[in-house]
Length: 175
Image (cartoon, one colour):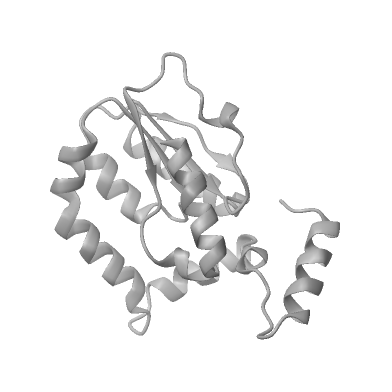
């Protein structure tokens, strides 16, 4: 994941700022991922239910816009609940590349999706998706007809306005 030097710099910068912050990416070790997924299933945490409801409401529109033979690239894939809905509906998806900071969540999700979609080329990549992702991770031979850079839901709220703008700009360059 991140080096101790990078963590120290992030901690010092964040805890020296007003208001104080600490990047949430440091919470996603195996236990942190388990806790987050448990929180997402609680009655009080409406965000996951709202994300799923939006996804279900607009899934047909998304699928018709995306088309077939697509390489789906997802940032912060977690358990892959929303991803499964999408992949179930896409016509002949070419590949799926989940990019996740938590190694344990990534491995579990990739195993589950490989069992559910045995014909799909699943290419998990552990990385801090808040940083630029190297293009070699996204290369395929032969390439998909197009790429779908997929970032569903609320994690954008973990960014400052400037960080969100920079992140979305990088995402747009990947498509």
